[in-house]
Image (cartoon, rainbow over all chains, first blue to last red; front, side, top):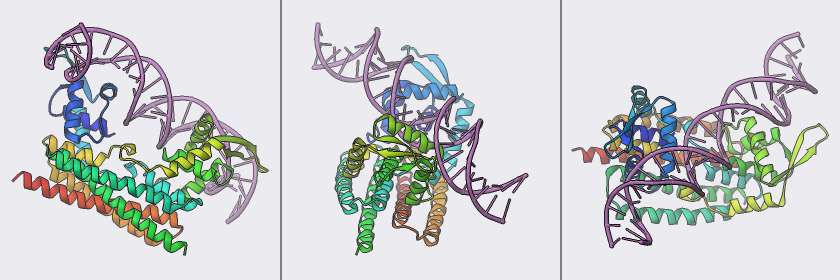
Length: 169
Length: 169
DNA sequence: CGACACATGTAACACGTTACATGATTTG
DNA sequence: CAAATCATGTAACGTGTTACATGTGTCG
């Protein structure tokens, strides 16, 4: 539901057309999760279906603009005033992978090591991206989020290794 | 792709039937992400479609057992030897929400505060669950993963607040 | 007997995602 | 002129998810 609400939020600042929404979405959230332009249109169609946006004809250049509805505004308000719960979050593939490795006979140390290398590289990439960027506040916060998460992942991997070594002694 | 690979990994330790797979999956990953039994069957059907498992008739009690194929075993091997990349991960709803709040005129401090309360509660719940549980190693590691993540989230929220306060001064 | 756990399955939908088709306009 | 950017849209698929239908066995 992130794209849905993200686009809806952008529309709450005024009517937009599809292509513009992608540009602004990426300008806000950064290059980490590129947004396929096709998805903007499919999402707009679904938002329209649900009565959260309304097609507002075309502008002077013939672009198809969309306007947020009252119901859409309420939905945005609800989104911002409701926290993201644990149950809302998708299953964590890495956690499941390590758990499965531990439960079945797979060599956990190997899996951990492989992941650690990848996460470390990602972390370097992210710090580099942060130095390079410096654009907007929103983008920087998203980058920071990824950095904080990657660091936590490294710590968790260390923890997993320590615990599983201790267990197999 | 977590459920898919999780079930496949369980099947790599020997043939199972659907209901048993759910029990073992939840025993391994814990109660955090309950697995609807219906989903086991839909996933098994898709695994069969892709040639990763094969229906192995019924056991003595008439239960429909499934067996992993050679291709399935290879897939499991690939899963464990390939790290989870940044691009594999789903969009982070919280990061997008905060970024959107910053970019549009929404009161970020409010959003942060609401989330912080929820995350703190989740963290308490998790520490309680950890004391209560103590079952298997895999389950404990999953719980630890959630704890590490929640802590990182708290730190990130603090960071967001500090940065956005600084910005609006 | 009634409730509950065991057990299997299907239908339908949501969202995310990509591939493709199409055309206008701008710019080197 | 050719390539790139701007711009819109559709078709199709994948996974995750839930709701529903159905039936057996067991235990208080």
